[in-house]
Image 1 (tube, rainbow, N blue to C red):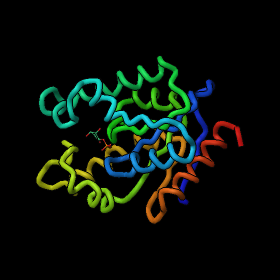
Image 2: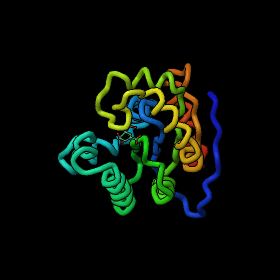
Image 3: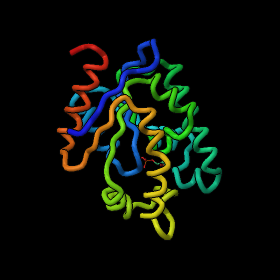
Image 4: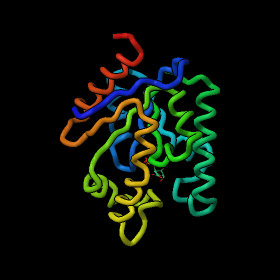
Length: 189
Ligand code: S3P
């Protein structure tokens, strides 16, 4: 597995969650489910929680409210998870969650942050049949994927404790690698 682990820059130990970040279609939901099965931690999908809390789908929020308001919902949800001291959960986040400095700090306070990486071709393949991602509903989704990936990569990198290139790996292999690193991070191995 191609991965690298970084030390937490905060002196206080974060809550004991595994937080998955990465581009749309990078496998956060599938790997989140695999981690849930292997570790037994409950799974929180931030997009689903926002949909439940607002009673609207993500495309409806983007269309009827705005992307900026969706970003506020994302920040409010991270703050809510922190103030509830949510721990021992797998938290799968929307692909744009890392884009604000405030969210980057909140994500790292929530736990061990893992960046799931894969190629733009894989992302395109996984997202092309799905109409639920407003940012990719355009004439040239491949161009949108490449330019957003370029812009966001530094944010994912700054936020994550661990980077995992998932290309060619099974869900089980990715999950095993994440769990091993998380145990090391929390000092329980
Ligand atoms: C977004 C990713 C989506 C969802 C929304 C915006 C983004 O989540 O939060 O469409 O900005 O990358 P997934 O990464 O789960 O597709």
